[in-house]
Length: 297
Image 1 (cartoon, one colour):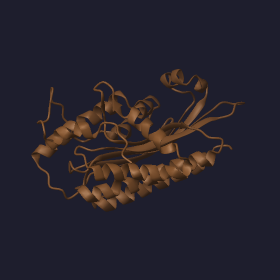
Image 2: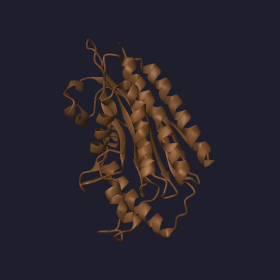
Image 3: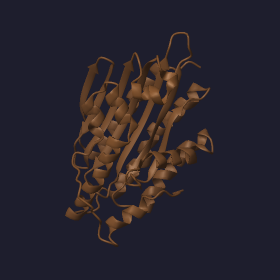
Image 4: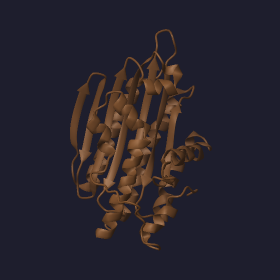
C-alpha cells in the first residue's frame, strides 16, 4: 500500500493541537507559536512558559531534501541518491516542581523516493520519563499505559520497544540511564501501511494518558532549594544526552531544520558540578538505583 503522506500530516498537526490544548489547560498558560518556513520545509513551533511547566515545547515539522545528509546515507546505504520527506511531532516538558518528572514524546514519519523504485518509508517514535525523584506508583502507571496501548498490535510489541527505549536513552559515557524509559521504535515498516500508522497514532495519543495523571499527583508537593539544586543537576544529564547521543537532534540540524525549534528540548536552566555525589541515604542518592533498567509491569 502506498504511504498516505497527507493523512500522516493531518494527524500530526491535529496531535500537536491536542497536546498543546491539554498541557495549556493543566498549566493555565498559553503556548507561543512560531510558524517557520525555509528552503527544505517548515513547521510550527510552540513553547509554553508557565507556573506548572517551566518550559514545555511541542513542535511540528515537515522537511524535504533532494538528498540525504552524508552521515545518514552512510548508515543506510539504500537511501543514497533518494529525495526524502520527514514529518514529525516532538514534545519535551520541563516542570517547575522537581517532584514532577520531565517527559519527552516523539512520533514521526520518513519517506525516501527515487524514480523507478519503490519508496522506502517508516514510522518511529515513543515516549520516555525522566524523574528527579522516583515514585513506584508513577513508574508502574507510565509503563502500564505503554504496555496497554501496545497490546492490540501484538504481545511482543511492548517488551521489544521497552527494551529499545532502555537501550537508546542511555548515557553511555556515564554508564547510566537518562530516566525510567517507556517506548521507543524506529524503522517501523510493515506490509500494511495502516497498521504502522495506527501504532504511531496510539503512541502519540497515549502519551497524555501516561503523563497527565503523574503531573496531577505530584504538582502540589512542597519543594525547596535542595530539590531545585538536584533538579538542575539532573537536567545537566538531559542536556548531555541530547547533544551527544540523540539522533533526532543531529538529523534536524543536518537537514536544515530551525535551530531554535530543534533545541527547544533543552531545559531553560541546568547545572554541572564537578564530581558531585548526593548525600548517602538521601532521596537524591536513591535515584541512581531507581532508574536502573527493570521490568515495571
